[in-house]
Image 1 (tube, rainbow, N blue to C red):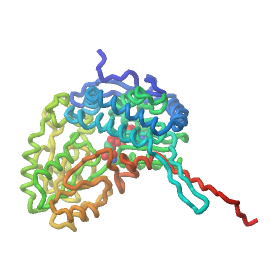
Image 2 (spheres, protein in one colour; image 1 turned 60 degrees about the vertical axis):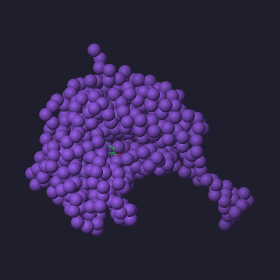
Image 3 (tube, helix red, strand yellow; image 1 turned 135 degrees about the horizontal axis):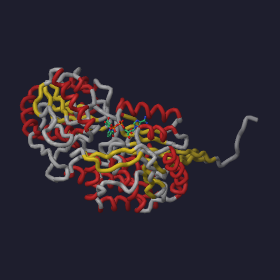
Image 4 (cartoon, rainbow, N blue to C red; image 1 turned 180 degrees about the horizontal axis):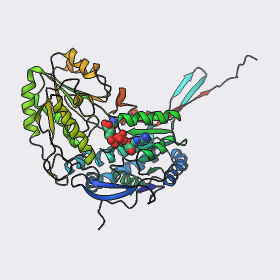
Length: 485
Ligand code: NAD
């Protein structure tokens, strides 16, 4: 019997499901059991061509609609997404292995927020009138044209919407390629957008590995590329886009600092560290995986952290009581276990966890290392799993310098009850998305993105509009033209 997660076909192009079994088969594995639940096929060159030519042809008419009309479609899609939240959350859990307890509140819901928010903004995207004496200049905010979205595997619905909603609000069309690890959810986003009234061809989804992503990025018809992925992939995609002078948004990896001063509320700080390391089993780009704790409270902090981490419920992700799921794939599990071994070898102390969980599926125990030093591999490289490194510090000046000593710059957090210190420290941290007495909140109203190697551009908020549109300026002369001859 076909598994309920199996999509009707691999791709969604021109308003309908399309199959081409000549492409490389991509198995979809449910991380909680290791069972294959679906198969999709990577896009062949013919599918890539069909998606790009369709999206290119559909864009001009879409851009001619009023922003209010486009916004109405996006807001309708938001409503449908919310109505189907349960079904979409179950699919997200099959796609990623993340527990239903999370997916019910964090995935389709945040996708719906993006559709609603950018749907609401679509009617207000205007230019300026700039008086120049008798003459004037006016500006027009125009769509970029055909946009390509490429997703990572940790938030397949959210990423498809965070890229699609602002792109469509501005009058662009999109070809979206989900991660080959989680190909299912984006198809539902496409289906819902078209059900809500998006014209055929405005939002298309095609499957495939990096090769398909590369073919999309290199195509001269593409005006913009928005990638969510790792820094090495980001460097390749950014370079390929630059060759065609295309616009880019790069949402890449991180190794973010979370700084806890000795006057902080310990339970709130522990809660922040848990949210910033163990949500989605640690597979979150903005995670605060370098937890700097001021020496005076170190042991108290570690004791409370170990106690609360012990309350994590590992189990069947479909059981709403489960609060901690498996790694997305066996490969990712092995990468993370490799880092855990490195941490032990390099002398870090295991406070809790430190091994694979004794159950089926790709589960790793939530792991806390203490006595971590700045030069250890686990403190330098992005692990993308449930591995928290706790480092000690003495002074504010010292911790700021150490927090910034990394190629990454996605997020940063500070816990303290001294508000002048909180703002002073945040002001000096090299990061795009920061938190005071909290960690990992990502509402659609707030800009999201990194500095340094963690990325270029911003998603969400009004900032995202700037990255999916461009400004035309028009000088209007009222009098005669003066010329030298
Ligand atoms: P990845 O870099 O391996 O792949 C990302 C996507 O790029 C996939 O869809 C992949 O098929 C595609 N791709 C790979 N090579 C390509 C190429 N040469 N041309 C075009 N496309 C190509 O990342 P992943 O393992 O799927 O995701 C984990 C990474 O994503 C982590 O580093 C994480 O920090 C990052 N991430 C960042 C954010 C953010 O918003 N900043 C969010 C989630 C994940």
